[in-house]
Image (cartoon, rainbow, N blue to C red; front, side, top):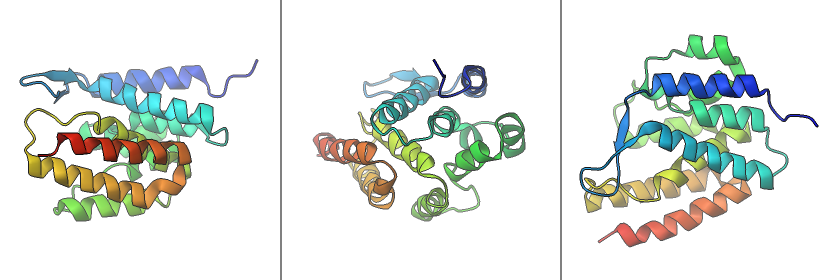
Length: 186
């Protein structure tokens, strides 16, 4: 039996992400709720794993590593050089494309820049971005107002429009999540 990816490299990615995101939390849907950030990372990885079981042409090695590491450059002290040294330039480039640029102040311009860079990457990176947004559409944080929720849903639609060709399965899931998110709007 062959293994689709080197399990030790996958474990290394998970351990690194766990160390880098240690102590990070995000707001849950219930007032005062704080959830460990690795819950989000795991959810993105689960989405990608499911897509890879359905779409056999996905490079699971690239997709799952980018899923696990997708926020390390954006939200931690990990550098591109460290990531590239440990996991190689292909994975590092994928994670870098998924990272919003701090040099861009405008939120919409920042997302458009990231989407442009993602579209220059293999479709597995596109899949990770869709999986990321799918997991973020389960429920908004308790402290978001209606305008923030509407803007987030609109941004999800932009992600869908730009990346839907990357994975039919994840595009369909994202479209359903965008539709279902309507229930959170006033």
